[in-house]
Length: 394
Picture 1 (cartoon, rainbow, N blue to C red):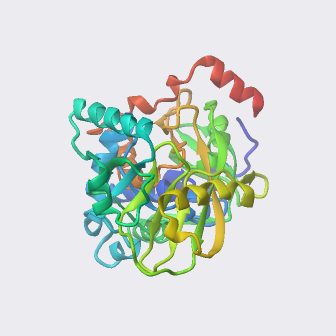
Picture 2: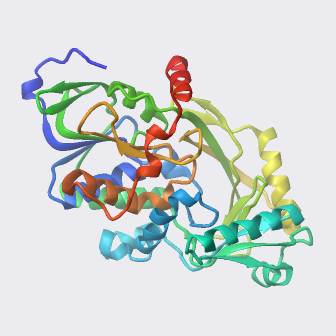
Picture 3: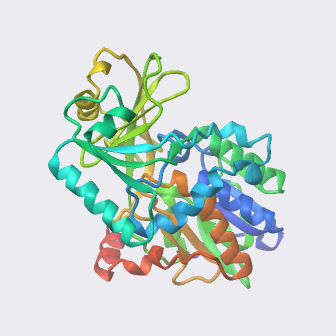
């Protein structure tokens, strides 16, 4: 999309502009700034306002798509070494807790068979981080689980962190390396000017050699400015939190084929998710939780942990995220516009990948190479029919 931009030659200029101030935007800004680039992050709301700041904070490799596993394994190493990445003052802000494990609980023989198949698949690919749990092993790890649980699968090194605090920590670290942030500024157009790109914004034009699109649920709109039609749709995943309860679990628990996800925080509250959709209002940048839909998630929790029956729910919320057709992200250069990069569509499980995706992008942008292949995340994987449908709908 070409826009009419005035005073292009006098607009603020940077080496790189990052669109979107979520975790991936902040991480990308940090790694670019560490490589010596001048970086501007443009965020139309506030940093971490949407999915990055309000997700469940799962730091997991458990049952990820196998295409994501090389990045996920490397990201886990970064989580355990946050002090090297963020410094000794900012790393503790993330409230990262590792080595507590994430467990996928199987509620019947069919789900247990899926766990067995999954472990066999990852072992065949050279990974040994997932282990099967029989009924007795599961009960030793989850003493309060009901008889409905027949076993499960565990990734013992997995854990969780505070999403809002983590996003803030990466933002502050990026600023320490010189990155600038503009909040409440919306990107409204894109134009090429010589070897540079000019982003038209609600605060005036901004120039850069490189643009990285980390716009989350709105990233497909910016991609179209560059001539890229990448199919995705917005979704608002709902969470709810209980009042404080006596500590009874350290592990993060997820369902295999059920709407189940919960953890107990340090304060004693239980955060319950599971992928229940909220009503998304894109124009107003918000989502509304639906009580009737939350019943399914709550019922699944009670099936496995009946002792929570009387736990009061004190708050519900949802964060807006971009969902791709195959539920894995787009991490790639633009197909049509040199100097434009995309990193979005993490489909509700991008939090754990944050520390590594920004690093890979910075390596590719500055050095032209990376230790990791991003071929699996190219938008060329989508058929022309899917892309055509998306462009017609939007």
